[in-house]
Image 1 (tube, rainbow, N blue to C red):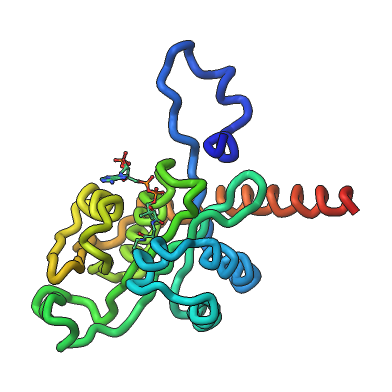
Image 2: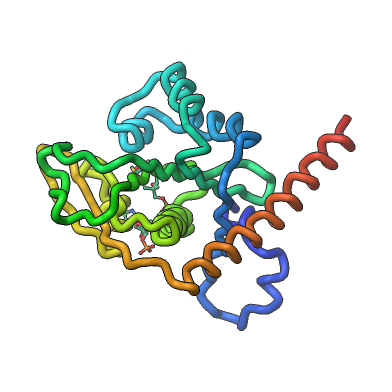
Length: 226
Ligand SMILES: CC(C)(COP(=O)(O)OP(=O)(O)OC[C@H]1O[C@@H](n2cnc3c(N)ncnc32)[C@H](O)[C@@H]1OP(=O)(O)O)[C@@H](O)C(=O)NCCC(=O)NCCS
């Protein structure tokens, strides 16, 4: 049922009989100021266990709101995935920061990092939309963006009990260091290429068209309802 919210309505006609259902296409869109209210709604919709996995602590609503309001969309990049009824079901926050020589004990040494900026990624997918490849796609998009922004190391911090995230990190080839129930993962990225620049631009174009269509449909439905 949930899967259908993402699927192309004609996909059933094109698929050969008996074929394994393909994962629906996931369009990752860079979020803007106008999406901030929906970001908050998405985070508030996470239950306590998800908030613990996402933020490392069970943040109360007020602090979640403060976190959302503090996201600097001029410096960081936030990605989102909308379902067919224009509900924001996933948010990935790619935060950029200058490298710190003496960060956490587990952090990479300066020798390991060439660039002056590092990026850290945090992601959450609404329960209703999990297992469709959305978390993976958000991660991949963040990695491409880092490459295109000349950032060579992408970090992720999570609980080592977070099996799903560990799986995504391993699949992406991240190096994982576990310590006292927490895990720091990092991925060394290749430099940008014309292919990565084109890939990111195309993905954003498709996602923007999709976003516009869904937003207009949603507005029309609301208008008719009134
Ligand atoms: C982690 C999270 C983002 C994953 O989102 P998702 O959209 O369901 O992820 P995907 O569908 O892309 O991938 C899930 C993968 O994990 C695998 N998986 C699911 N449960 C698993 C488990 N218990 N152990 C190992 N792998 C598991 C799936 O099989 C899938 O692998 P595949 O793509 O190779 O088939 C989502 O569960 C979430 O929001 N969790 C709460 C917040 C959180 O943990 N954030 C991460 C902290 S930064």
